[in-house]
Structures are given as structure tokens and as C-alpha cells.
Image (cartoon, rainbow over all chains, first blue to last red; front, side, top):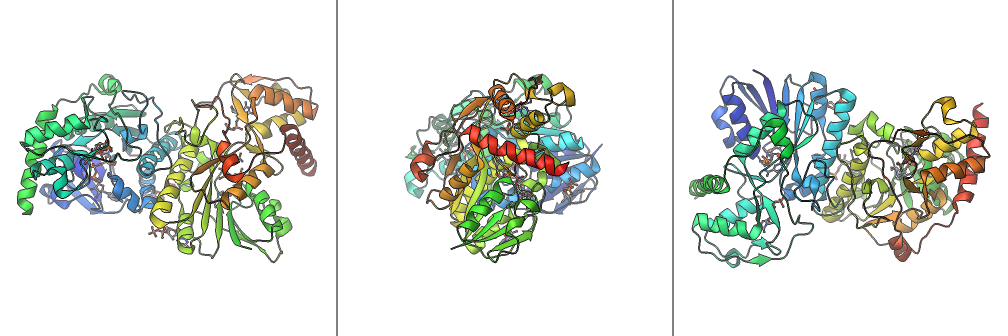
Length: 312
Length: 312
Ligand SMILES: NC(=O)c1ccc[n+]([C@@H]2O[C@H](COP(=O)([O-])OP(=O)(O)OC[C@H]3O[C@@H](n4cnc5c(N)ncnc54)[C@H](O)[C@@H]3O)[C@@H](O)[C@H]2O)c1
Ligand SMILES: NC(=O)c1ccc[n+]([C@@H]2O[C@H](COP(=O)([O-])OP(=O)(O)OC[C@H]3O[C@@H](n4cnc5c(N)ncnc54)[C@H](O)[C@@H]3O)[C@@H](O)[C@H]2O)c1
Ligand SMILES: O=c1ccn([C@@H]2O[C@H](COP(=O)(O)OP(=O)(O)O)[C@@H](O)[C@H]2O)c(=O)[nH]1
Ligand SMILES: O=c1ccn([C@@H]2O[C@H](COP(=O)(O)OP(=O)(O)O)[C@@H](O)[C@H]2O)c(=O)[nH]1
Ligand SMILES: O=c1ccn([C@@H]2O[C@H](COP(=O)(O)OP(=O)(O)O)[C@@H](O)[C@H]2O)c(=O)[nH]1
Ligand SMILES: O=c1ccn([C@@H]2O[C@H](COP(=O)(O)OP(=O)(O)O)[C@@H](O)[C@H]2O)c(=O)[nH]1
């Protein structure tokens, strides 16, 4: 039994991680400023003796005693990044890890590979990221954070873990973050053709690819990685790859929408292909994703339906 | 006539820039914490009515009124970076630029290209940087700073300039920063074979290349860029390319040392080739380097000789 801090624990990924850690019997402390997270995601734990919630902005110092830190706090969606890029790169939390000698897992991202010219992406690939463009803030913040983890590990002998997380979906994901899973499900549920709301639908040709992991698989991976003894980056994602057009059709079918597909201008620096090579995670952690896309999407669609009901 | 802030103005590049701006009749304010810079580099201006020196660490806010900011402050040498990676990426100075609507030039680096797979390097090349390795702190700090410049330019309509500076040498450069120019000159002047001090000399095969610009050429480039209307990154460097082995021989000859060359283990993630494509700077700024390597090295060697005399 350990004392574990989860920054960003009220968010999509964080709240699922908290559920799992609580069920395993750990003491869990969540530090979140509710910038994109919601109290509702974790309210079922409030009052539990092993659980503590701190309303805390990680741009400020934090002094607590813990054994492990899952550092997930960070706006996950590019528009949030643009809002205040300065704040995204302050990193007191490594100072905390140093003081209390906690093991530190950093939630990095497949975005460190940028628009990859190597496919699928292995951890040894250095990436193809535009440092001076609209996505740069998010991508480069994650890259420099990896660099700082490396420096702290070398200089301060902090035990670190780097999870390069690929696109993940599931219940509690944000409905209005403009990402593809939420947009497509919402648009299909509202039975809209793109033209109705006049919102973008498929950006560009739709031939660009992504590989989507269900959130429970990601949580398995994060926990295995934390408890491994490997301190270099590890991809955590599902290698099951789809074009965005295929993906739109799958969601439309599952929802039973008879909307048509529409196309909009491509996004600047939009990665054209993305699929994790998970050989390392398989070998090292004996981990691999188990949830099939259809199964995961059905659970996610059910969550969205329910949320829409609650809202109206 | 303008009010111009030069952060890092007591450093190698900064002090030469200050000289030029002062001679052009501007009001110049230097903000420096003398971490790697020296008062001696700018002491000839102290007392001049157009000159002001502020002992200031740029990790803290700064409130002054200026028209232009050359942001050069940042430890230039990797060992300095490792010392405190957290401090390198705080960036209040963009807040200053925003408030006073100053034009902002950021001293970026060829290191954003990492170990380049494209040769020579054009500004459109996204680079090949290891985000998780010993050089990562320096490289990624520069990359995320470019990203933040981009974000501030877009969101806050700040007028920004990005100079990607390639290896530069000349008088006032650091004698003990472990970089190739200073090491080779010092070692030759002290007429050492590598074995004497038992210090590394050529790291790796010596077949890796660099392209060296003399500092006065760099200053021309920086000032032209600042006063241009181009806000994307521009390479400033000398395309004259040498292998490190050639470079060692040239310096040995110029100094007249009869030391031999020796070889040491290669450095991790050492870029194997580097040469700027300066087509953009030529076209845009009508700029190109004018000082020949031999000429520039002779001036630099003279400076080093004199420094060694003063010291002993
Ligand atoms: N979801 C994905 O597909 C995905 C993919 C790659 C990487 N990641 C990374 O995983 C992590 C979690 O992502 P998510 O999808 O759960 O996002 P999320 O937005 O749901 O969760 C982030 C949480 O961090 C909190 N937070 C943000 N800024 C904070 C601050 N300054 N102080 C304290 N708390 C703060 C938010 O309130 C939120 O609860 C992020 O670091 C993200 O970059 C996610
Ligand atoms: N010299 C090169 O070959 C080269 C190549 C690429 C990029 N650059 C960039 O050009 C800039 C200047 O380089 P340089 O060679 O003159 O280095 P330098 O070390 O001589 O100058 C840097 C100056 O910044 C000051 N400084 C450092 N941290 C500071 C802080 N927190 N607050 C205030 N001042 C601080 C130092 O005291 C020093 O005077 C740097 O940003 C460097 O990364 C230089
Ligand atoms: O338990 C701790 C220890 C440190 N810090 C912060 O982490 C930052 C970096 O601390 P560290 O000791 O690593 O570096 P330094 O203070 O030497 O810059 C500092 O601003 C501390 O306030 C923190 O928030 N909690
Ligand atoms: O409504 C949308 C939202 C996204 N996308 C595309 O779907 C892919 C995944 O986008 P998302 O923003 O979800 O994630 P990321 O690009 O970060 O992987 C990208 O190619 C987007 O251009 C789309 O076609 N329509
Ligand atoms: O003249 C100024 C204006 C701002 N800042 C600092 O720059 C940072 C970023 O300021 P900005 O206004 O861009 O962003 P915000 O305060 O909204 O984060 C702040 O910490 C300010 O203290 C500064 O040092 N000098
Ligand atoms: O004493 C030295 C110092 C550097 N180098 C090599 O010279 C090149 C330039 O190194 P430096 O640190 O000066 O600059 P950078 O790598 O940042 O261009 C690199 O390939 C180094 O491995 C060398 O052979 N001997």
C-alpha cells in the first residue's frame, strides 16, 4: 500500500487511474485545479478514508509526502494550450519528487513524434515536430518536460517513468474539446450532417490515420510502467489503425445516424499517420491493449447519450 | 534612435551587439545576471549617457519601457544547462514585450535541428532532436521558446523575430566552456598534446562537421533581422563547413603548435553534420557572412593569447 499523488486526477485519464488505484487499496491524493477536469469524475471517492482531493494549480509549489506521483495535469487539448502557454511549462512538481524521493511518472504523448515520417512509431524515433507553428506549444511543452525528467533523473537520481500516450477515448472524456472522437460521436448523436451546424467534420482528405486506445487499457499500461524498473520513454497505445474517414463511418454506424460525411479544410501541421509500435511495452511490461474498438466505442457512446440526457 | 533592451548583454554575443547598437546611437539597456557573462565585456560603456546596466535574473519579472528586445540571456553551454534546467525555461520576458509592445528577437540556435538528416539545414526542416537525452535540455528549451514566441505572436500580436544562430566564435568568447573553438585554441596555445592534460581532444572520429561564423557577421545578421518585417525563423550562420579534424589542424597551424591530435570517445547525440542554408537570410535581409575563417580565427587567437597573459 502506497501514498500516491495523481496530478490532473479529476480529468478524463486521471479519474480512471484514481478508480483503479483506490480499488487496489492505495492512499490516493488528487491535485487538480479543475481547469478541464470535473469534480463529478471523482465525487464517488470523496469522503473515503484513503482519498484526498486538493484544489491546487501545479504552477505553484506543493508540499506533501508521497511515494509515487502520476503527473497528468496539463491541458490536453490544443486550444487550451494556446490560452496560456507560459503556464504550461512550469514544473514545480519535479521539485516535489526530488524532495520526497517519489517515483515520478510523466504523461507524455505521441505528439512528441509530430507528423511522423517513420511508421509505426518506435520510442527511438526522434520525431518530426514543427517548433514554430500552431501545435508547437503542446508538442514542445511535452518534449521539454521529457528533457527535464531526463535531467532530474540524471542529476537528482529521481526515479522517473515516461509514458508516451497515444490517442485515448472512453467515458468521461470531454464532450466539447474539439477532438475527433467527441466531435464525431456528438455530431452523429445529434444526427447532423456537417452542414447543419456548419461545423467542420473531416479535416482534410480523411486519409490521415490515428490509432485509438480505450481508457482502461491505458490505465493498465500506466500502472505497469510505474511499477516497472524502466526509466526511458515507453509508448502506450493501441496499434489498431484507422483512417479518419473509416473512423467517421464506424461511429456513424454504431450510433445509427443517417448523416452524411462532409469535408473541411485541412489543419496546419496535422500528423498524417500515427500508430504506436508497442513492442517495448509488450516485452517490458507484458502489456497490450485488450479492448476492441467497437466495444470501447459502444461504452463511450452510451456515456455521451447519458450526458446529453442529463444536460437537457 | 530607439530604446533597446539586450538580455544577456554582458555575454559573448551580447556584448558585441551592445557595441554595435551603441555606435549606432541607440539607448541600450543590458539585463544580465553575470552567470556566464562578464562586466569586463561591456565596462567601456559604463558611464555613457545612452547606456544602462541592470543586474537582473530573467527568471524574475522586469518592468521597463523599451522599443526593442534582443533576448540573448540563456546559458549557451550544455554543462550550464544541466545545472538548473528549471530556470532555463521561464520566460517572463515575453510578458514584458507584450506589455510595452516591443519588437522581440529571440536568440534560437541550430541545435533545434539536432543531429540533422537533411543537409544543409533549411528553416523548414523540423529537426532530429532527441527529447530524452543529455543535450535535450538545451535543445528543447530553445524549441519550446520558439513555440512560445509563435503563440505570443499569434495571440498577443507581438512582433517577433527568431534567429537560429549557428556556431559562432570571436573575441570575448568563453575560454573554459568546453566548446570546440576554445578547447582547440587553448590546447594549441598551451602546446599540449592531448595526453599532457589528459583532456579530451577530438571527440569521436573527427569526421563530424561544423560551420563557424565570426561574431561580427552574426551581429550584422541579428540587427538586419530585427529591422526586417519577417517573423518566422531565419538561419544566421556561415555555410563554410569543416570536419572537426580539419578544424583542429587549421587551429594548430595558425597557432604554430607542434602538438599532435588525439581522439576520445564520441559524445552522446553529437550532431554529425551541420551547415546552415542561408538562402533565406540572403534573399530577405541581403545579408551574408564576410569574415573568412583564417581572419576570424587569427583575431580570436590574439584575444586568447592576451587573456592568458593577463591571467598569469
Ligand atoms: N487523452 C488522450 O488521448 C491523451 C493523449 C496523449 C497524452 N495525454 C496526456 O494525458 C494527461 C491526461 O489527459 P486527459 O485526456 O485526462 O486530459 P484532461 O484535460 O481530462 O485532464 C487533465 C487534468 O489536469 C487538470 N489540470 C490542468 N491544468 C492544471 C494545473 N495547472 N494544475 C492542476 N491541475 C491541472 C485538469 O483540470 C484536468 O482534470 C495529459 O497530460 C495529456 O497531455 C492524453
Ligand atoms: N555562441 C554561439 O555559438 C551560439 C550559437 C547558438 C545560439 N546562441 C545563443 O545566443 C545567445 C548568446 O550566446 P553567447 O554565446 O553570447 O552566450 P554567453 O553565455 O556569453 O551569454 C549569455 C549571457 O546571458 C547571461 N544570462 C544567463 N542566464 C541569465 C539569466 N537568467 N538572467 C540574466 N542573464 C542571464 C549570461 O550572464 C551571459 O552574459 C544565447 O541565447 C545562446 O543560446 C549562441
Ligand atoms: O516538495 C517540494 C519541493 C520543491 N518544490 C518546488 O519545486 C521547485 C524546484 O525545486 P528544486 O529543489 O528541484 O530546485 P531549485 O529550488 O533548486 O530550483 C521549487 O520552486 C520548489 O518550490 C515543491 O513544490 N515541493
Ligand atoms: O472534427 C474533427 C476533429 C478532428 N479531425 C481529425 O481527426 C484527427 C485526430 O484529431 P484530434 O484533434 O482528435 O487528435 P490529434 O490530432 O491530437 O491526434 C486529425 O487528423 C484531425 O484533423 C477531424 O477530421 N474532424
Ligand atoms: O512588463 C512586464 C509585463 C509582464 N511581465 C511578466 O511576464 C509574465 C507573463 O505576463 P503576461 O502578461 O504575458 O501573462 P500572464 O500574466 O497573463 O500569465 C508575468 O509573470 C509578468 O510578471 C514582466 O516581467 N514585465
Ligand atoms: O574539445 C572538443 C570539443 C568539441 N569537440 C567536438 O566539436 C564539435 C562541436 O562541439 P561544440 O561543443 O563546440 O559545439 P556544438 O556541438 O554545440 O556545435 C562536436 O562534434 C564536438 O564533439 C571536440 O572534438 N573536442
